[in-house]
Length: 453
Image 1 (tube, rainbow, N blue to C red):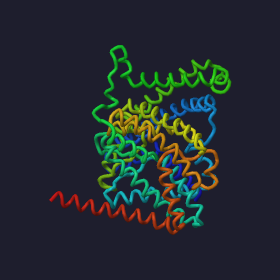
Image 2: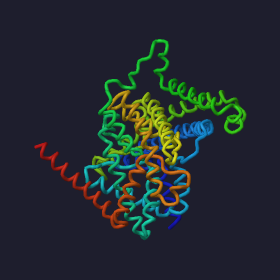
Image 3: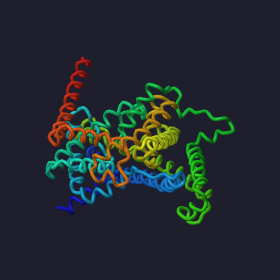
Image 4: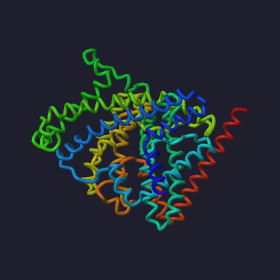
């Protein structure tokens, strides 16, 4: 049993395998030829691996930047890092996490089948992290393991359906279609960014229309502009850290300026690779989902990881990252001034969430929306982890916590219910959310029918 569970968990937690299987299923349901089916599955698989490879290059490039930053400015505190928390938590909560994830995926498909919310959540890695958070919180309220899995799976299935749904009106503005949705644990922050852009920005002044003087026209190439921006950022931080420390701890003897130039270039290369992977992935997964829509979940929309929106506003990606990181730095100063726990800006979280916030802010509010939306999102993910920490029991004080906004939203929701009435309030609250989703789907469907008459 444990061997089978481990095998299934390995499949669903590997997004490349998961989306490839979905692509193959879609091709089979469309009765495509064996050749077309194999091609679709492999290209989807490889496209996602290319995307992940690019993300890996970026993460490896950002890691020394984060270390230099902490040393240069002598900062110590809480470091939000999803992988670090989950790595510790799975030792104790691994089985319940896996089962919650399985039940959550099934629940997501059932809700998509019977309601108008047709979003199928395909970001397996962040789904695992959210399942882990839910397991950690529910474990504290004397529930049986069976109850934890049932309640947690229902909660995860609702999350997998609702969060892509409430962001979809703005995702549509980004992509111009309803072909894909966004499945990431920063969706709440992207919603905030999009709303900020809508009300304080000017979408006519897009980040993608930034005009450069003739002598600087090379900056229109996103690969060049990203490389230059990151190289300059690396060099500034490296100057504060000093050549001796960088050479001994990070660069293996390479001069700190040369090291900074190389790492900044790697970052830009990683972004380029991500964009290439996204293009290949979308060419296969969107047509494949037509088969699933026809046979299993009519009208199904694949909800995918955030790099899928990066090609739609490449300048906003960099602007959003910088703005979010600046929000994290300012938040750190405020926290230190008021004696609060200090949340050190996690560079990877600020890149993924900040860049995506920039894209959504730009879609609704242009340049101003990209800057302000990502900046506020950066502040958000700097303060909500402080609220989440006590809800995570002993793990909440292990020096790290979950990074993205949705973890705190879900954690605070479950924790707040527990304060009201323990496990009964948690169960009642989750069931109430399910009823609300069903009623909203029913009445909005009736409204659409009446308007069409």
